[in-house]
Structures are given as C-alpha cells and as structure tokens.
Amino acid sequence: MPLFNILIILTQIIFILLSIALFTLVERKVLSSIQRRRGPNTVGFFGFLQPFADGLKLFTKELILPTNANIPIFLLAPIFTLFFTFIMWVTLPLAHNYMVLELPFGMIFLLAISSLSVHTLIFAG
Image 1 (cartoon, one colour):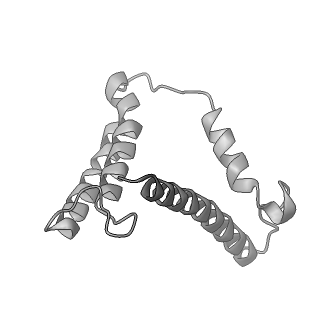
Image 2: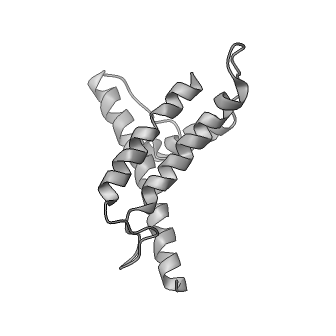
Image 3: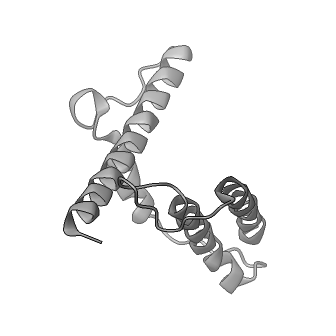
C-alpha cells in the first residue's frame, strides 16, 4: 500500500474523530436548549473544547471494581467493545479502491459483529 493511501486513511480517521467530538457538542447544546439551560460553554470558545475536556476527565477517573463481579471479565468488557468496533470499521472502504477486508456479504458481517458487541454490556454487569 503506497504512502499516499496511508495518509488518506489517517486523515479520514482524524476527521471521523473530530466529527464525533463536534456531534457530541451539538447534541449537548441542543439538549440544553430544549431544557432551557445554558449547556457546555465554559471550556474554550462557545464550548468547542468541552468534548476534549470530557475525554480527559474520562481517562483520569478512578477505577472502581464491584466486589461481587468477576474481575477479569469486568476489565475485559471495554476491550472487547473496542475490538468489535474496530472489526466493524474493517469492512468500510477507507481510500479509493482500498478496503482492509473485502467480503462478499459485508453488510451481514457488519450486522453480526454489531450484535456481538451487545454481549459486552452483559459482561460488564
């Protein structure tokens, strides 16, 4: 795979992550306006840095383990969720005429993997 295709894939991933952060901010702004409150507006200009502050807070939170949980399964559940999400992205075309995994029944594979990710919620308790 040429270097140009790798750069295209990396820019697409960056734009996807930024659009997810922006959609999260827009959702929170709309919900706060529906509920007639101010919403996220303290971090950055009009709250544009709020999703990044939320992500930083999420990564620095204290780990709490339930006493009656199966600890290895409880800790592996988010890893399985991330793994299934990455497996779903494998079937999507990333660059011109380039797919990581080209399947004849890609949509059925996508639905099957998305149904498996529900089980990680059961693992987490």
